[in-house]
Amino acid sequence: MVIEKMVVGGSPVASAEVQEHSYQVWAETERNLLLAERLVSELKQKGLYITTVESCTGGGLAYYITNIPGASEVMKDSFVTYSNEAKISLGVPEAVIAEFTVYSEETARAMAEAGFLKSVKADICVGITGSISRSDPSNPNSTPGIIYIGIKYGDRIVSQTLEISDERRFDVKQKIIEKTLEIILDMMIKPVSISSNDQI
Amino acid sequence: MVIEKMVVGGSPVASAEVQEHSYQVWAETERNLLLAERLVSELKQKGLYITTVESCTGGGLAYYITNIPGASEVMKDSFVTYSNEAKISLGVPEAVIAEFTVYSEETARAMAEAGFLKSVKADICVGITGSISRSDPSNPNSTPGIIYIGIKYGDRIVSQTLEISDERRFDVKQKIIEKTLEIILDMMIKPVSISSNDQI
Image (cartoon, rainbow over all chains, first blue to last red; front, top):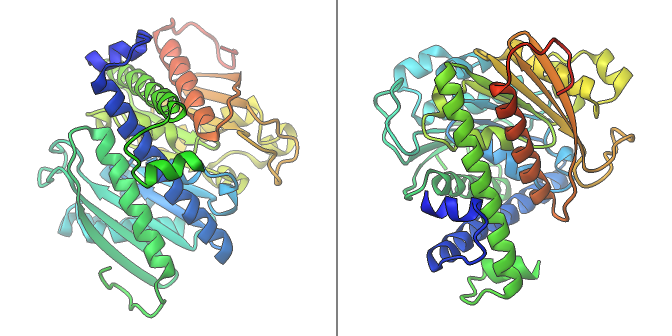
């Protein structure tokens, strides 16, 4: 809070701590923008559209992708499903959440499938779910920092579990977005021979 | 690109230009987080839920709001409608876009109304549309930097036009989010006597 007040108050001299943290935030932002730029370029080359269904990242992945000029040629829509009700409303089967919990690769894959079907035009859909910095009162089985990514790409569907730790909620989300962009890029350049439901 | 390469390559010494820009990105990020924190606190106090329907900000407003711990108590879902089709699919009347264009206060208000109805639980819904850094080939009437905000809050619906200019697309989006957070906060603390369809 002290750091925030210094900036909001417009202090002209940044402390060493502020300088270090500002550099970290900026470097992570630039890295994500660079990855998003690569993804948009890859999608454009292949003529594909992407849609996101985001829980814990709250729209951050779509935000980075749409920061790249020409993003409207690769994204038509995305969904922030920040509650179980919103996931179910989009098309995630209630039974999947009941059986595997909302924090699971099964739910991440179901989110990707639901967004794929609900989107006005999606060739790839990415679902992200997980708990970031505290236990979720509606879903008591959560472990902060364990994140589940599901990706539907044509007739392939894959998922992966990430473990991400950082002090600040904002920095954790930045890292989830970075890793997710890398996973999508990796999947796009891999041969299409991976069978359905394979783990990455 | 030179700046990006320096960081991605992990250069330990930041140039004066990098230091200045990193400080700017960080300060703007912290300012938006502080505004989002105030908004989440205000919503919690009033027991209200918010939903966003974002075009040019691409999920960035939802991203900032969900960066605040406890955001799940004030947001259930949000929508990124990054195309005319997605806006219409959400519930924006095609006739509104045809008559006023997608870049208009009328469309921003229609986006807010559509999200308000489509959300699993929304007491406030914010629509954001506009062109950021270049002319949009699908909507040739666009003027980069002119942004339209529509807010549905209970039975009130208001809208506002912003003019935002900056060199970088990323910085423009950060500023749109800042202004939108300020407008929502302002609306929430104003008396509820404003009549329907008033301009802010």
